[in-house]
Image (cartoon, rainbow, N blue to C red; front, side):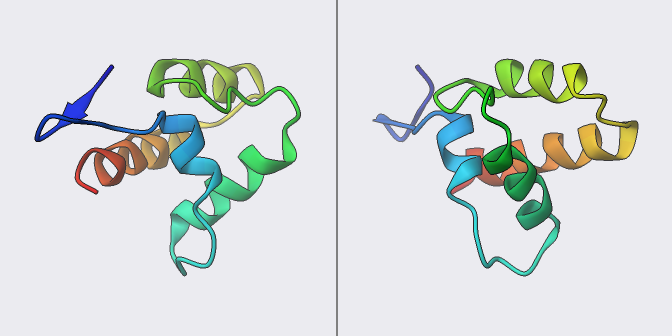
Length: 75
């Protein structure tokens, strides 16, 4: 489990699905995640990326996902 200052981080999938009303591009990725019944809600970044690839995400979406991971890690 990833930790930040000794505290466990919530799973990336959980964090992403909770992102609403940010007014940025993470809103769009999160909205797609919330609409996907097979989205790995408690998954790590790799599980989320794999699911997005399975759904046909393009390079821009995957790059945005990587940026979202940076936001998650620095919360």
